[in-house]
Image (cartoon, rainbow, N blue to C red; front, side):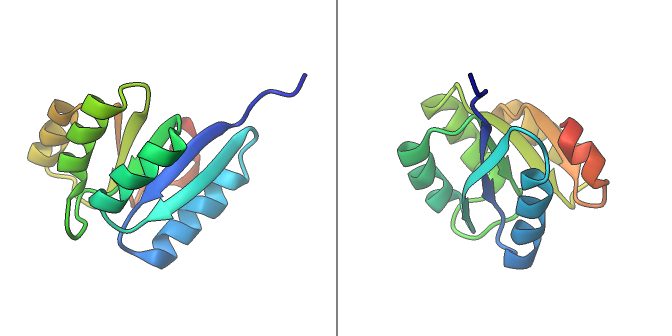
Length: 118
């Protein structure tokens, strides 16, 4: 019996970055990217339809940022884990992300192997 892949959605307003993250994830065994969006509002709409295992979310996005989206995800879809993937390294961003319910926090400057671990 084949193991079901771990299902992920991506939210980042930089298309090329999203595409690169998608490629890194899809090289991993038992991982699948179900969809991609560029802001928090579209992310919430996508989660309603797809119910993924994880959302990988940038903090700085138009219409609804990642911290606010994370809070909403944790309230509406508690089974979906949230990994913040951002350029913001200041401790206040980390604090806000975890206070909103994020399961993890990774910097965009980190390596692809760290993404796999996260």
